[in-house]
Image (cartoon, rainbow, N blue to C red; front, side, top):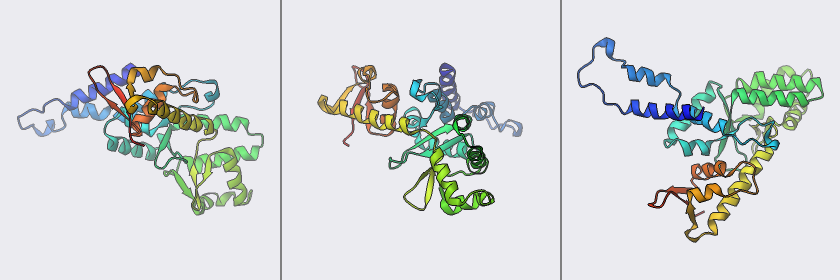
Length: 271
């Protein structure tokens, strides 16, 4: 639960801040108990992913899209962005998560837990009419999803992976099918971005909701408002909810969260 996850974060920080004993430890005491306990706990990033996952908006148009987490939202919850990046890289290499580039953004990423991405592929397979398409998607999953660690893949590398498949389909046909299914998106270079099928509506909500919230702040004096007041506003152009967009904007450093005697303020940066 969210309460459990938040208590783990607090416990980790409390244990890490405890003073170490002044005496020189014996050899069998070198690995102190608090250190061992801390290493067994999930990282702040892992806990934050679970918190955001549990809060993913439940809307009719998102029923077949398992929770997608924005990197900017993790930056909002975890102050040390280097730790976030390091944890995400480790989780990506262990195939605990799938990591994706947000195509229309300059340097922004989203992720999905591997179990959720596998669920999404099951939804997609259930809609495919042709058994050959299902087999192609299975091949992609076993040879790209579970083995490729980057957010992009070159055309040359993709062709190498699908070389055993050439007896069934030409490479151009394979690419065309994978683009149609939505697991790949063409990049501006000679290659492809890995993608989440049917994620277009979700991405549109991100852009529209972000723009609407920025415009709300732009119209206010000093381009700022109390955090609690902003949270109460309803975003009309997105089904993701105001809280989702506030975390995104702060994590993306488009908006600052500033303490004040009367309460926390949200102030628009000069953009």
